Length: 204
Image 1: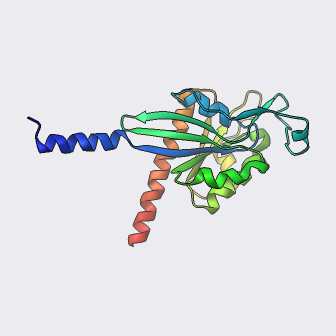
Image 2 (image 1 turned 120 degrees about the horizontal axis):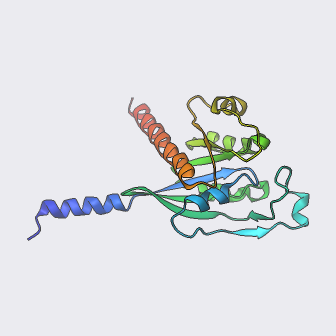
Image 3 (image 1 turned 180 degrees about the vertical axis):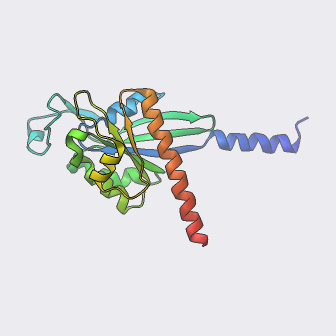
């Protein structure tokens, strides 16, 4: 015979196991968003990539990413289990300005965001930083350390982007699963602290 306590415990365990958080992966064109989602996802990621066209060359700045032949036109989607009872649903955003109308839809209900940055084209992530700051969505900046690019410390990147004090900056390799997972863990921890602080402010 199963006790009421056991039933309650099982229900609680089920609720915990069902906990899934929505995370955005944003940044400039060709910075590694699709790569990051694909590297960490435990399911085959959904991708909406199309070949770059000659027409797109008129509106897409491919400087610094000349070898790139495809681009995300809607979103990338993946899933990763951080620990028992906690999964993250990852939504990679398109990087070009002409697809930004999708961002408002994708950001609905998001816990937070990862803004990928390339120090060779650091200015490309300014729009994403501004977007999340203005909407008070917690985010971390993950510097994708490309081979051959000059290495900058987290403090230098934070100062160059004029980030709000306390916004985490993490050095990473978007191709490496463990590195990408560490970025996501930092985001979940930071978003949790921000959420707690806002609750305390609201009751204070």
